Amino acid sequence: MNRCLAALSTPSSLARMLAAALALSAAPWSGAQTQPVRNFPDSALRAKMVVVQPPEIKLNGEPARLSPGSRIRGQNNTIILSGTLVGQEVLVNYVRDSLGLVHDVWVLNPAEAAEKRAGAATERNFRFSSETPANPDAPTRAN
Image 1: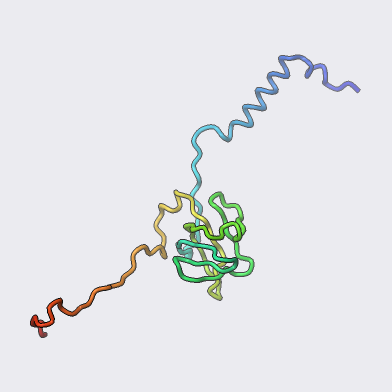
Image 2: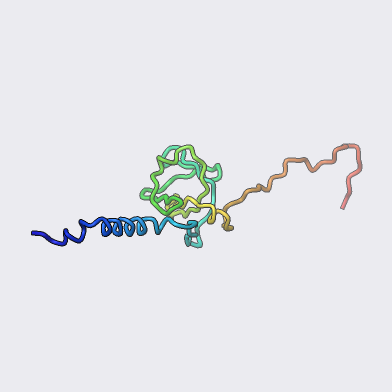
């Protein structure tokens, strides 16, 4: 059976097909690509996460635990295994389940990290100075 092989045997038709295939394969990669900003639940909080030893993690330095069946999504929204993040500090949005375990985690891309989100406390409200006057013989103000 000789089916349409005569049309493919000419060099010009092969060149056109090759050019079309290259144009189609290069089309999605042309131009600047920006990562989309994902929609997170309103209950999602932000933290710096470090996987200590799965399922043990630290959120902003505080110990926490991943729930059974937890999902960690990367910057391009693909599932990441917690073992691949051991020892790395990543900025994430996360949601806890009803038992307080971390269930959903999204590793943020730069566009998402620029957005404001609750839970990303960078400053702590500590006072490390004494309220007593520097000179103990100085008079104190009485109310």
